[in-house]
Length: 433
Image 1 (tube, rainbow, N blue to C red):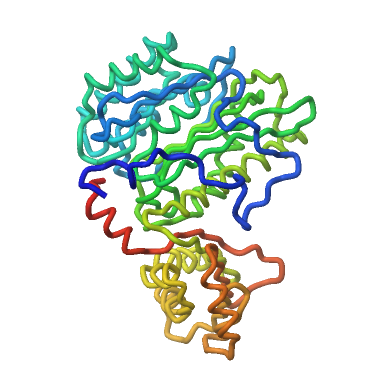
Image 2: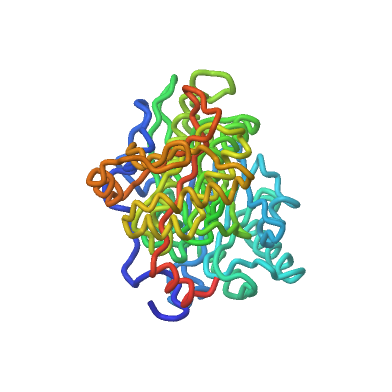
């Protein structure tokens, strides 16, 4: 990797090989199937992506997504960071987040920690997009990703916005996807068909993220489109819990980003209504949840230098303690290094849990790795070493932790996380973020 490059490697990125629903931890609902075309947007959407010169590589770095529905509906979630980037601040303050019609995104510059100038630049991006697309500025959301503490090259950006709006098309999925990527090693995208009462709707998404992935959110951009007819209340009621069950359950390095943005837009072009409390609502929610969870797992799998994905599930204790324990294991450099090396060093898990839940008495914790018990009541147990070593060599590894007070049927607290590799250090030593 060369200093200053914006992606890992020089080969063009494509979707990860194989079916979209590849993880054993996500099941595709029976009424959901992958669309034949990965590049076709749902009805009522056009998109484009172009290169304007923000990225040193000259690759795509400006994307525009437009919803052409007569009454577009949207919902959004943003980073909880107190150092939120200028685009996030602008979206919160100036946008009608339930009625967004356009999203403009740039990669290569985060426009974060840029003060008043950054906010002014964000407003200029919003305004130039509004003029180019003929919509009200408050219906334009913007997003940025890339290096923190640098300013947008506004002459290039405004020209790029104009260039992108000139080539908007229903087949613009691929170019838009490329325009949001930075250190991604593969594309995280989805194109699904969802069977509902009244017909089939399309559900698609473009996602990016590989490093600075943190609890409470992932350092990512995710844009979701559907041609289902949603109310604004239904859109937000669908998106917020789905984000909580997906992107807020993952960690690569425990670093909360300044720019996290997830936006759902619905064109209504299919004519199939999804009303709160209806069977269609439940079926659509299942589809959205499955898609978002799989995208979240792909984000972890693409953690910079990642080889394996871990899943820690903590049962018992009070909810706050279970959350602390799960996060501690997922963010432990020692646990993550063991995960990378296929090392069943469960003592590191005990250490992480004990540090997260300090006390004067020994915590009677139970631990199993891929179903193989390794610790009971806080003490080592006889184990099938051969089965354990085979289990930790897989690409997905599950750690189950049981605290006192666990009850039968308790789903537990889940966090999905990546390993910690030599390449992670190399990437983040050579690539400025």
